[in-house]
Every structure is written in structure tokens, then in C-alpha cells.
Amino acid sequence: MANIKSSKKDIIRSRKRQARNAAWTSRCKTLVRKTRTAIASGDPTVAAEFARQASRQLDKAAAKGVIHARQAARRKSRFSRPLGALGIGAER
Image (cartoon, rainbow, N blue to C red):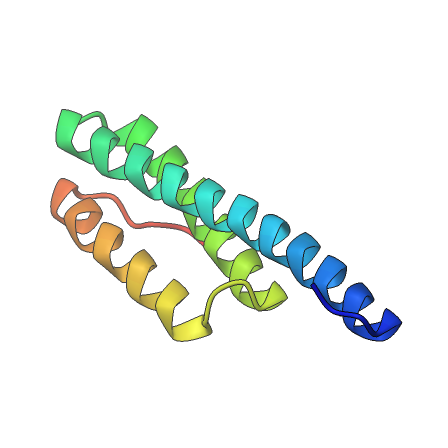
């Protein structure tokens, strides 16, 4: 444990940020997983809705700096390709 007061504050802030980022990351992963499951089930309306939610969540996470912008783009691209094969355009 740190002895300097500012170092102790840094540790507290770091833990708060880590918890917040973990929540955002988990939310993104869950929505991407639900999107993939919906695509696999073949239900276009549910898949499109989950894709829209996942896309928004990934964009917000990238804007907040939780994940890198290119990582968000890559993840969106990966679930958009099978969506396109179903005949659904993923809206942003």
C-alpha cells in the first residue's frame, strides 16, 4: 500500500475506473454474444435489434475510451457480415 496521500487517491481512482470499464466491457460482450445467438437462430428482426443495440454500445464504449475505436469497428464488422448474409443491413 502506498504511503503518500496522492498515491492512495490514485489507487482509489484507478480501482473505480477499472470497475466502470469492466462493466462497460461486459455489457458490450453480452450484447455481441446475444447478437451472434440471434443471427444463428435465424430470426432477422431480433438479430437486427440486438445488432443495433450492440453497435450503439460499442460506439459509446469507444467514445468513452473503454475500448479502442478500431476494436469497436472490428467487433461491429464481425457481427455485421453474417447479418448481411441474412439480408439485414445493420443500422448504427
